Length: 124
Image (cartoon, rainbow, N blue to C red):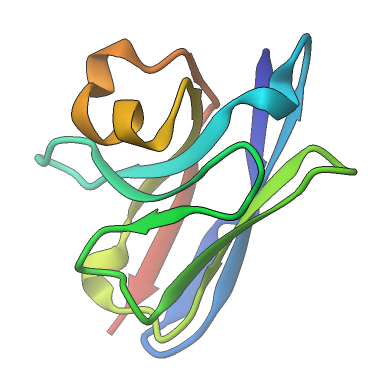
């Protein structure tokens, strides 16, 4: 499975960005998908995740109400709509594929597939 993330950039606080992650490869549509982020000097953390069918989602407390994860199964693409961005959202964002949301939230070392990161910088 290959994951290609895009959509990062430099924005001002309060602005919006939408990240995309295009998945390809065998059975890629059957995985739960997630967005992680890693800020300088900090550990990688799960921001949002969505199950294979798109009817179950997870959000970190820090982004609830501001970020929305969705997936288009026809395009095999997962999106992260980020609104009301804050300076503390600045990080490299990675998309990932895993067995389930539960697995992604509890075992980052066991994540099946990672995409390359995309930089999000929010200026205050």
